[in-house]
Structure formats: structure tokens, C-alpha cells
Image (cartoon, rainbow, N blue to C red):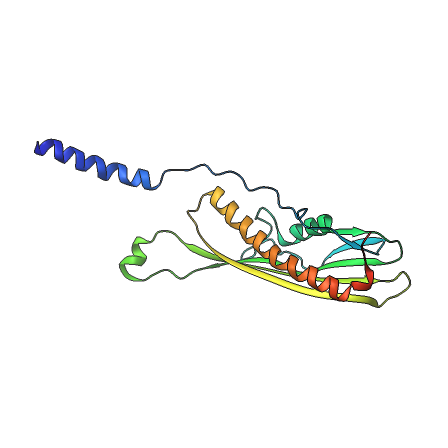
Length: 198
């Protein structure tokens, strides 16, 4: 009886780590779109997309490595939400900042630090967008807005590819929800004379 009990206890200790670390396959996140929102009809003939922010494409900047960079996501937003309905004016969409920066977090000291073999990093996303409307013959913008949004997450180096993809996707989606609300409010406030309803 004692031998059976020992075997049972050993089995529990051997299988407990496996059950705690079992892999659960997760679905890939859906494509990032904004078609659920009504399009904004602007009395402009063209839309120009300008990326003033140039990614260094090296540490600590990682925006070029995540599923959707801030600049890519802003292009999707413009495609899904802006409709050019005129022919005289130009809308410029300017990415002032589209960075995602990684920062290693300090390890615990002592025994806890020795046992913690993973390295956590904080990822800070910043997105600053300016919009300007120009007339055909004017060098000065007739209307302009500037908005910004940011989010931060913490990830461990041992996070799976699926977990990292989903975390970055959610960070980008949350950032764009914040930016979307600001853009819509400011466009209807300051671009009101250029917005059409048919």
C-alpha cells in the first residue's frame, strides 16, 4: 500500500508541470479593419499619406517587427473611414510619430531574481497624427487637426509567438480605438465645412 501511494505521489509531481504548461492553440486575430464605423465623406479630391516618422528599425524600436505597425494601421483607418467626394482640395494625413519602443524591466534581486530566468519587457506605443486640408492654389492649410494616442504592455521573453501576436494586436486595436474617437470628434469640429452627407 505504501509503495502504491509513493508511486501515485510521484506521478502527481511529474504531471503537474505538464498540465500547467499545456499548449492551447489559439485562433489568429482577425484582420484589423474599421469598416464597422460609418465612412466620413470629405469634400476633397485627393488624400496624401505622409510618414514623417522614419523607423530606425533597430533596438529599442520594434514597430517594424509587430503584426501591424502604427503607420500601417493608420493607412487602414484612412482607407476604411475616409471617402474623398470632391475634386478641389487635398487632405494630407501626416504620421508625426509611429514608434513602438521596448524597455527591459529590472530583475528581482536575491533568490527570487536568481530563480527568475525570464526577462520581462515593457512595450510603449505612440501614435501622433496630423491632418491638413489644402486648397488647389494655397500653400497654407485651410483646416488642420492633430491627435495622439498611446498604450503600453508587458511581455515575457518566454511568451509564445501566438501570445505575442495577440498582445501586440490588442495593443494596436486599443490605441486605434482611442485615436478613432479623437479623430472623429476633431474632424467634425474643425473640418465641418468640408464634410458632406451624401
